[in-house]
Image (cartoon, one colour):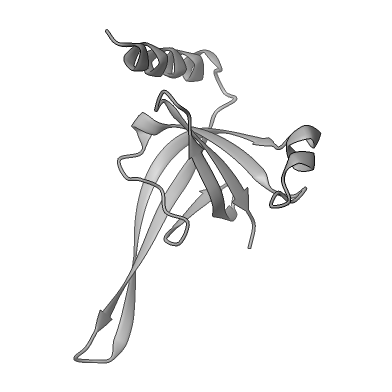
Length: 121
């Protein structure tokens, strides 16, 4: 077993051990297709249920970045729970009745998690 596999397994165990702290959310990809015959755009949503840890950014993180806003939300998600690569232009996350745009996301070096910067529109 390689180091990446070991880390991914440890992250999965940590998510399980956290009990009710991780929350269920909807990961939504919206694609738009142009129909040249009608001249209309048609949007389609593809929803995936994911489980993530939602929190706020620390004061230190806020102070280091000009792009973070105090109302931004941080979400940590296991990469293995998402079959697609995230997109800033196409994707949103819905949690607790709130829809968030993905402002930024970063995978960890081991490929076990994504850390999302989310912002309400």
